[in-house]
Length: 395
Image 1 (tube, rainbow, N blue to C red):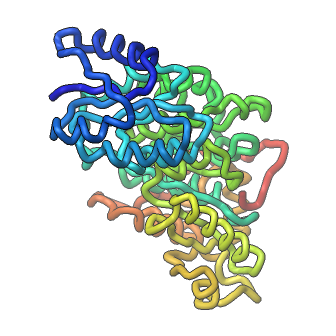
Image 2: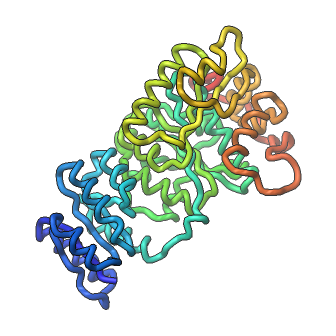
Image 3: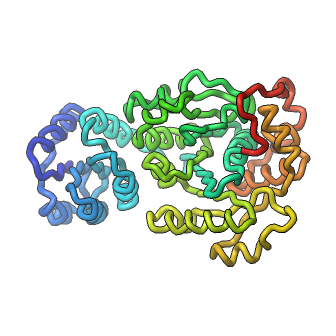
């Protein structure tokens, strides 16, 4: 199969051609075509190999070009453009691009992408990414994320967990972990890191969950780049059967990249009018961005409180079914969070503990194994009283 470069300027085409030649010196030289002639040329080729497309400046034209090229590409469609526009990155991937490369780091990113294409992976063997988005305050999204990762690790042997609440991340504290490295450290390499580097950045919990922690300092949040998040989640699919991502409701570009990469989007909420209003606004916004759809699932946290909005009324207001309810169990959850021990370990037979395990199992059927997903006896030495500056009853 012939390789192609789609670019309207010769300098970009020359940069791409140089990397392609170095990657496979025995392959025929890639043919360079302009964006206006590319579709017709690839249509005549029938089954092109690797196609590297330098995206036009206009986002709408860029996405249309990717969508029109994708049906004719057999070896991988690599889109090159700015990474400052998260919607463009997500849109290009959804339109059919195999990978998105930062124009400013073209040589490094193209070389890494070609290596990934040369080692194809069976999609069935890749893990799932589950984003947890607390669109309303006090929804307990971080508590749910931490417990899901631990429960899934117990069932599946391991699970990933990423804290994208860059300024306020609590997952390390909720699991009583002390990360040596964080997402900010990983971001110093942009997207130029491999699986081994990601694994060195993770901090391991005794349950089998592995955390990619939020930056230790608020100032370091600015270091986190959208391409780092996208690359980390892509690699996490190779390592873990499930990766849980605690997403912030700021909807910044790195958050949108995580939402776009997710297979399932959980939206925890309380059954009160303020929460319903905020979740409705979030669903509208995500819908406009193409990030909701059939992936979104509503999960009530702290359900069963006096005076709450009836479940049927909430479903009617949001136009969606509620798939799961974690009941009110404030003392149990507060004690577990203060101890730095997930509820599914601290109190597995509590109402909240059982519901969280059920939620984890609803993401995929658990493999057959002896005993419950999480055992009370596993708490062992994990039950040490928390010492942190700001303890919260339920994050």
